[in-house]
Image (cartoon, helix red, strand yellow):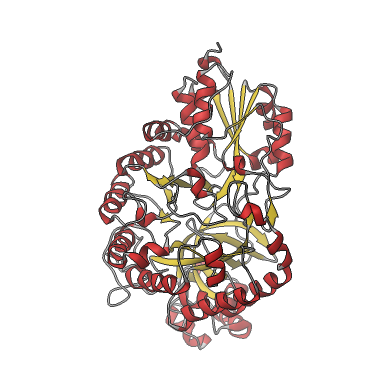
Length: 584
């Protein structure tokens, strides 16, 4: 038997994207943390566990030596929903296979990759289960497989799912691994699992393959947050569940008391957190239990941070598609759920004691008196629309657009509309249909997607984040065409473009000046009129290059009012005036 205390283990995170789980940077999923904790629980010392992301391997070829020389190599990853990613690039099948070929020790692969692999990580594709030349593939939980494989001297394991007691231990013991993530500590958000599984059986979804909904007790999730907080993590998302409103109940009926214990406990052990967001909320829950749901939503909005998004799985507003794919909510029910979230949580947080915008800590607030209209709303719904499902027809696209137009025309807000094409996985009903419908409708899909971006996304974004909206702590990620692009940490954060090339890896507060389809333009807030560049001044609404030139020529100014008078434009929402030493 191999002594676990002598093992060198390398763990590579290839990133995950599931219906109820996300782990592409700046997110770190539960998988590498739980695997690391399971290894420690099995007797492997922390210091003998090496963690890399797939991007880290790409950036430094010397790290491949850790894959090659490990006694045990563990790969976790897999994409079961398609997406486009800015913070990292998920591992492609060829890279996953190369790791298996490189490793000289025992190899284990797990995570959602067990559901299937396509030729590429994209929608409108078919998948199949493949071992990709690994010695072992975890058909159950990869963390349980890693634990049992080590406990059995690397000789094998029985595929199984871990229990609540195990995940409670492993979540805390594996928190250390986040310190090796390239984004740690400032630009890293930890995905948290409150439960998994789903009582519903939509044709395309892999979440029911985890079984009916089960939940971790609030104190176990809170303990995990505390362990991560002690390791420097300040950003969290309750993303690993099919429906946050059903947390702590029977999987369907809302349980506001469980949400109070969960959110209140997190705020107690992580008092200086920067982000507390969520992901999935099932609109059918709100439609069936509107008052209990409203109470739960109000609990969330009291404790979360601004800009939070509850992803609604409408998937299709077409009743034919709904029927043929066992979708559990229709367009009318989803519309009512959108309205309730807007009413219960669409308020903008109140000002702090010094009159500045609050940081989103627990506070009372509403969209009325005392609210700060310059922050994003606390919590808004997002709509998921999925194409290529059984029964899809040309009318489907029109019905989806009609639903979105109705939401907008009624004065309601959506944080984002996510449009994608189905991936067909074995074990789901869509495996029989595959990607044939999605491929047949490819041209129609592209035109429809462009129409939604132009007719819905742009005006909706102007409503959600009007000119002057302040976005604190935008992390600057890359340069393009003389501008710097960045995002806040959180669920579906806005992409922000800032004039000029600023230092990457830093953060800046931004005031919104203009809108794209899914992104905004902004200037650093507050912008010093006496030091701002021509491009920054020009970006302020109403200024333009002529007025910006006048401001540059006539500065320094003694006050914002003086600068505004010279420009003939109100600058109060964007500008400040600092000492003349900073002027040109």
